[in-house]
Image (cartoon, rainbow, N blue to C red; front, side, top):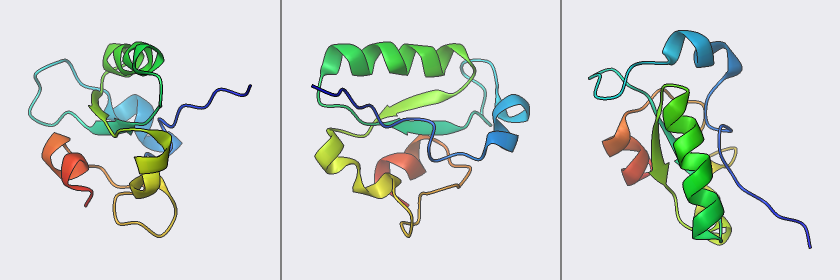
Length: 87
C-alpha cells in the first residue's frame, strides 16, 4: 500500500530558505499538511516546524483539495489564519 502525505506543495522552493523564521515570529509562514494517519502527519508537522514554518493540520488526503492547482491557497505566503481558512 502506498503512503501519501501532502506537505510543502503550497510554497515555492525559492521561499523555503529565506522564509524560515523562529517559532513565535509574527512573519512565520504556515504550511498545510494533509494525511490520513495522524501519527505520520504529526511527524511531518514537527519536521516542518523544525525547518522554520508553522504547520497547519489540513485534515485527510480527501480533504486536501485546498492544496491543489487552481485553489487560492496554492503558492501563497500565508500565516496560520489564512491557511486554516483555505484562502
